[in-house]
Structures are given as structure tokens and as C-alpha cells.
Length: 173
Image (cartoon, rainbow, N blue to C red; front, top):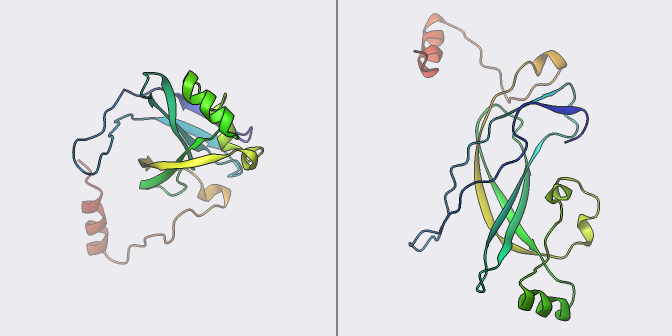
């Protein structure tokens, strides 16, 4: 996170549960790990990002990285779904690759936050490793007062019937 955006509430990082892939042909994992966090800013520069780090056991029982991924949090309010491409760092030589396999110490980032920055990433050798699908429920407040419009169209009410229809869609109880 950059200094112009500050976290005002919620955890900045967390660890989810252990999961197993499904037995069907899709072979998917499902993690139910709700994150609730609030940011404050007057500037969209350095918009927050979600960094995902997945770990698992190799054939020898060593805990190794299975993938890293990063995406910006949605700017628009509402329910958003993003698919994050995952990747793993690769050894730069055959000798390093064999040593990593024998010792169970594969390449990984000391601080995964480097993924959210841009510097130095271009020299890292990586291999694609699947995707992670993330659902966001985003709420924005007062962006219009700062001169930002983050929706494609502002709904307008032209009649009492349209107002009643919009109120029914809100599910207010």
C-alpha cells in the first residue's frame, strides 16, 4: 500500500484453511475466506491490490509454494468477480532446479508484497500455474465529491413507477 491510501479498518493479511481438490474432472479447490477491510484515500494512485499465495505439500511432504497471484481491488461498487492468473518462481539453472527438488527448498519470494510493486519483477523467471477466482463485494463512498465517477451510468428516476421498481430491487426490509 502506498502512503496516499491508508487502511482504516480490517486485517491487512491472513491465512485461510487447508483445502483439497474436488474428486470430479474439474479438480477445483474452494476456500471460504471472507476479508473485510476499509481503505481511505483522496487519490486513486496506488489503488489497493490483493496478493494471493498458495502453498501445498510436494511428493516428499515438504511445504512448497504452489502459486502466487495479484490483482487490483475493483473500483466499481457492487459484486465483482476476478480471475487471478497464478505463477510460481522457477530456478534459473538446471543445477539449481535439481538441488531445489532434492532438498525440497524451491524458489519462493521472501516478501510476496514485491508482487504488488513493479520493480524487479521483470527479472524473475516464473511458470504459469493455473488461476484463482475471487468474488468481491465492493462499497465505495463519496468518490463523486472528489470528482471521480466510477460507474458507467447514474440511474435517473423519471416516474413514481420507476422509483417503486428501483426500491423493490434494493430488497430493503
